[in-house]
Image (cartoon, rainbow, N blue to C red; front, side):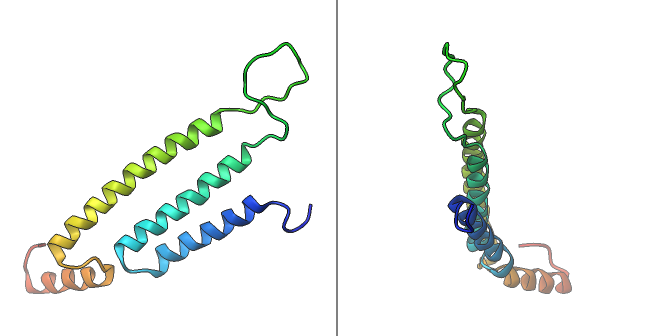
Length: 126
């Protein structure tokens, strides 16, 4: 197998690194959430790639014992994970909207500064 033999593995690594970089390096909360979504997409690709069987057919029982069946469990788990990740993405964006209303910004470092100033002044959270 050559170094470029498995494109899915390379795409997985690239997406994973893009998502990880976005989560670590960005201070904008929306960009962090989008980076997490990219990271999750990479994980989905990894699991789907691991579940592929060369020559595998749909798991419909037939009389031929030489048939290799593909497990539908991977697709079912990833479909469920996609639905859950979309729900988490929507809730995260709703929380960011409320943070924007409360603080007037969605930059994480500015929110920390606002909290520190309010703590020093003895005020409650906004």
